[in-house]
Image (cartoon, rainbow, N blue to C red; front, top):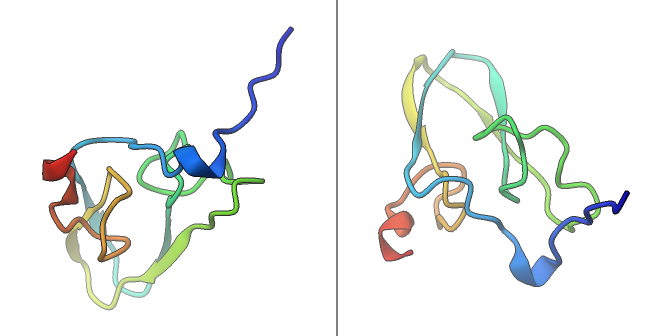
Length: 88
């Protein structure tokens, strides 16, 4: 059985989705956005970034409501979508 190694840093982040993830967040709750694109629990971290040199981005919701989390991982406004996916 061949073990699959994680992508090299030059290939990260992996585009998890070319559209944002609309998520209803709860005030006071902290969320950990996946920055590497490898998580199976997108847009949130599941620890798959291990040994990639990347780390999740913590976001604490100040108020409840819908937020659009970046899926392409190319945003300049981590963890939120800034429309960068339109250039992919």
